[in-house]
Image 1 (cartoon, rainbow, N blue to C red):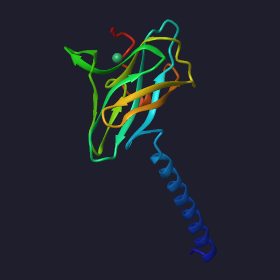
Image 2 (spheres, helix red, strand yellow; image 1 turned 90 degrees about the vertical axis):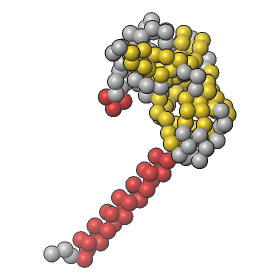
Image 3 (cartoon, protein in one colour; image 1 turned 90 degrees about the horizontal axis):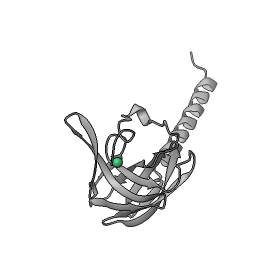
Image 4 (cartoon, rainbow, N blue to C red; image 1 turned 45 degrees about the vertical axis):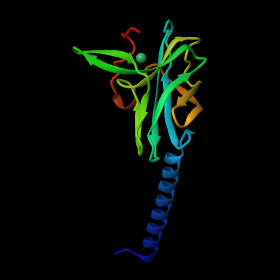
Amino acid sequence: MMTARHTLRMFARLATTLALSTATLALAHAADFKAGSLEINDLWVRGSVPGQTNGAGYMMINNPSGASDRLLSAQSEASTRLELHTVLTEDGVAKMRQVEGIDIPAKGSVKLAPGGFHMMFLQLTGPFKQGELVPVVLKFEKAGEVRVNFTVKPSTYNPGGASTQGHGGMKH
Ligand SMILES: [Cu+2]
């Protein structure tokens, strides 16, 4: 049999839990970067290893608006060139291909992730050091230009056990 005091304590705990989950939701909804109505989150690159000349950048782009947009290009002082790439499998071999843009559907999202779309940093001007930020200017067709930062993760970083097939053995 529950005492009144016990019930009250349960309510207090429930209220705390609710307050905490509301705070968590609010955090999850705050975009790392915004370009117009586009929300850009979880921007990262792997730390480079000695001798590594190229790197790949990943991020999540949300488009809550009713109009589609398109990522056209990007610039960074971290590399000589910065291209938009995808990964295609031909005859069982994964190959990277440059793409002219990455469409972001209305009321939708695009995830740049290992094994798919990525930002390709070609001829790094310096190593990607874990914990540092890599500044990049993204250019969208409608939202225009926005300055963002990619966070450098450990060189072995592998989100959610996603495919690591990508850049080690691939040529450009
Ligand atoms: Cu690539």
